[in-house]
Image (tube, rainbow, N blue to C red; front, side):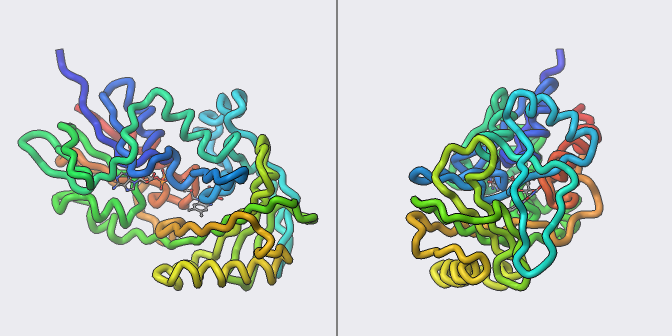
Length: 323
Ligand SMILES: Cc1cc2nc3c(=O)[nH]c(=O)nc-3n(C[C@H](O)[C@H](O)[C@H](O)COP(=O)(O)OP(=O)(O)OC[C@H]3O[C@@H](n4cnc5c(N)ncnc54)[C@H](O)[C@@H]3O)c2cc1C
């Protein structure tokens, strides 16, 4: 009897969980996640009576694979289309032709549902991979030794995967070539709902690029929660700036463009995404080194969207022969 391969997947975002789902029938899979929560950049912050999808705002489903995958989640009420009243400050109002989906009651719901049958070790930040005879051993930042594993796959953002992968990984140059940009999310919670003529807005010619009333997404029984996102270029230029100054600049930009009075917010919080959006993807849909039994994948192997992460994981699983 041949034993099942032991597999470590770094990251419990949609890419890591999709790969775990596809490999679980034939392998013993463990997902290692540095955060407390599941979902990676599809995460949800709850604070007081407010709630914010402070990463991905919504996602589209253009390909048949992702549409087929989503269908049962839509039927079960884990995912639903969001139809906000749109506007644009400084340009033309965008028209959404294809549906934009969100998780219910928070963006992280889809990844939580995907993780229900998968072993996920949370609050486990992988710090290094070490070769031991014929297997891999991982070491967490806290010093825990994890493994043994036959295969290790990283779905961490490209720069973080590059820092983790050992020198023997044959795709290190491709990994190091990929580039991601940052983003700041400013979260504002209001006790009294301001009267707005829009639910979501793109913003041009400003440090701010997107403002959405998170509480207008379906199934949100929360206080009036506004999520503002900086442009990626502005974030990148201010990625090491003092957070207080970043918060003040973005608050001023929101106020000037939308008229929302930030001083009236009861809850104000800033989150820095160091690796938010893909600027330069890899040329390949996934990076697989069969000789060393290592792989790296994620949205940065494609268009840098939720569906791109899903597609990268699907392609990797299809291209993999675990023997
Ligand atoms: C602000 C923002 C807005 C966005 N807006 C949209 C949008 O509107 N529509 C859309 O489709 N997409 C959007 N995206 C992109 C979308 O969120 C991503 O494409 C998608 O979530 C990527 O999933 P992933 O699993 O590939 O990566 P991630 O979600 O980043 O998952 C990687 C996981 O690896 C973990 N990890 C990293 N290093 C380690 C380590 N050393 N040890 C253990 N775990 C580790 C991380 O904590 C993370 O959970 C947005 C992203 C951001 C940040």
